[in-house]
Length: 336
Image (cartoon, rainbow, N blue to C red):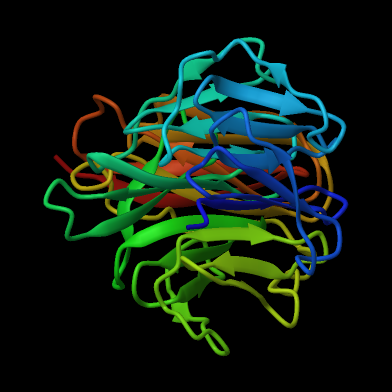
């Protein structure tokens, strides 16, 4: 049984199987394979921007910078299990999910922090998109409902409870383009969202199995999925066409709105046609500043911030975006 499939930035494929104590490598897109390690129980791997490979194993998190010819130990030496997941953001943050916990490292494995969990009681999978949004797939205590949560601040706060999959059990999720999420399921094949998980569509043409257990992306943007006994690669890249660059300053309605009951935080998105100093703040109706979300220089493009009402009383609030000498305001509601 195939346990995990991974690829480095050069398109070299790695596979774990045969009872886990096997690591296989293919340099020709899966046509031929060679076994390169049979001493460690490997569960999953991921490559960072600089082609350092991170492996989850029975001796913790290890890494390699020579296509897995030599292995090095990180400070995470606690043995992991076959359900563990690893993802690396474009700025080098390493995320490891292992049995209801998520750890992160911002220094390439020298030190680790435990992340505050999103809603739901069991982690299923994690993913990171190119802009650093962290996605967590979870399931309810009765195992009947699967959810997708998003964090834009490395897992410190989450937008939760607003997106869920109306499909069979979520097995893996991943992202290769901002807002694009691809997920494998235990019976409905592959599903895809191009709007940060708000809506989902089937994506399984050509598959002879709908029960899938792994998902990776090739450097050219094609998706690779695996069932128990087969590997499938999409004929074309799954990357969505990038949205056109913003031509004017804009501020979107916060979502979800209201916030405070089922959803403990809200996302506020905005667009900058040019780079410069940006301020995004939340005020009560008397004009009192209650929270500063952004206060820095930012590059042009689309951005987002997370508003967590904390202990703020229920009521109506105003959030204000200031940039380029312009100011835009909108309202949001906090409920208890």
